[in-house]
Amino acid sequence: MECLNCHVGFMRRPANGHPAYMECPDCGAIELTYMPQDYQEGIHEVPYRYTDGEIDTQIVGAFGG
Ligand SMILES: [Zn+2]
Image 1 (tube, rainbow, N blue to C red):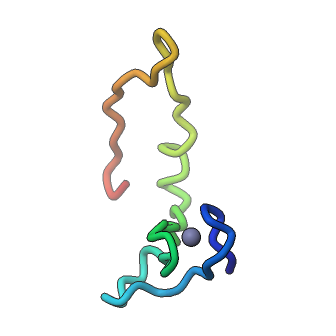
Image 2 (cartoon, rainbow, N blue to C red):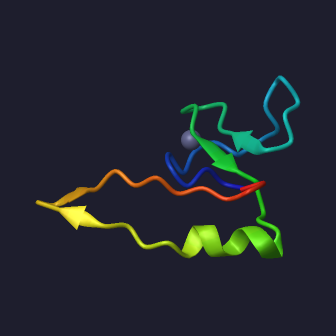
């Protein structure tokens, strides 16, 4: 899978073997491989709130999320 940051490297499993992300050996970008469970999807649909062009700090949480 091509790196979507530098478009040069190919994403690979990190040296520590962690299953939650892939990394680009050329630029260091990471891509999460996390796929939410059904009960976790709602938390990802919370919209960002903006004030003066910046994202407001929000506290969002869910059990297991
Ligand atoms: Zn890259």
